[in-house]
Length: 477
Image 1 (cartoon, helix red, strand yellow):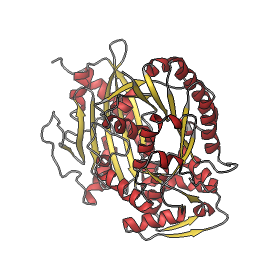
Image 2 (cartoon, rainbow, N blue to C red; image 1 turned 180 degrees about the vertical axis):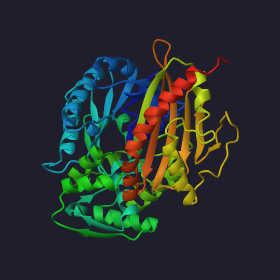
Image 3 (cartoon, rainbow, N blue to C red; image 1 turned 135 degrees about the vertical axis):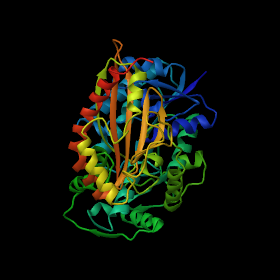
Image 4 (cartoon, rainbow, N blue to C red; image 1 turned 90 degrees about the vertical axis):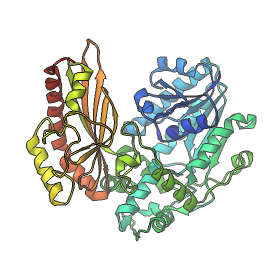
């Protein structure tokens, strides 16, 4: 059997491409540096594997029996040295693909203007060059702004419009782009590598509209019924604007900065060669935006917290797609069953394991604002099932003995998820981890999260240790 390998399946495009290819009846292998991340996506027809392009020894096994390999990794979130990491990863992957006899590498790059100023765009261009220098034919598809739930550029636009009725913006709002619908891009990625004439070629792809970022924001505002006034100023550079984006958008800071740095130049796809080879109906921005919003609303209930899942955002698409996160862990010699029994008593009689004197005032504020705190009782004192309420929380997913996921229903400027994980360690020990995810709603949501961060760090450190201690004292069953 020959596979199509989606290398980097936990990323934005990879998480959509893997199930898309599988839905077309293709044999798909999907990889991530942490296989549990892609396992949570629940793709029944996709083979999962763990690999890291920066660890060459992990590559040969996942490239075995692969005829087409999609290379979708980048290191923007790694900090300032991401170009060096991207180059090393690309060399490792190209060498391993050649050793395993891969027939084609498909690389998704970004549209590149003449003399690109952005380090991000230059790095993406260099990655393509490195892959082409290997022994496997490469098809590079370059896209600009992708319109789909979870696309970093799309989420920045959504956060800006949803939460800022007046925007003081830099001159980059007049830069032009040819945004492409996620569905159009996936079709290109699926069809292009099976054509012999695409080997060794570079294609620029986009939708039918050529728009400034100001026009994109205005059209999105009209679509969602927002009134947005955009005031461009000359003194606000792309780099300066990336700093205030920290307070407006939940998109990870390093990614948002790299995106903004690339907005100072026009990125236009004026190449119709692939459109002629792979015909399809290309969507305009409004059509693509409607499709993206509808895809967001139809997101299935996950088996656990998944980045951007609408159920984890109170079914409020205006809340940030990306989350802020705080967690802590503790080790325990107790069995997974004992740990699970303790976890299932969370909130019983107002007991949240640690620092209840901090939980109480937050619940009181929620009660004053008309929230569910203090108003609801547990269905059962010691057992939980999906749908149960625990004070101001509701169980949305669970894997007994392993994981409990609860969504916050308190009054807040965003949506929260609290997750408990039990993992087996060596030496017959287990690790209990408590994690809070928060999807902020604009500036107030970000300030809310920043204010609570030190309290979360303090509370979760104590919670995990109390759970471990109580489980060790649990009677055997």
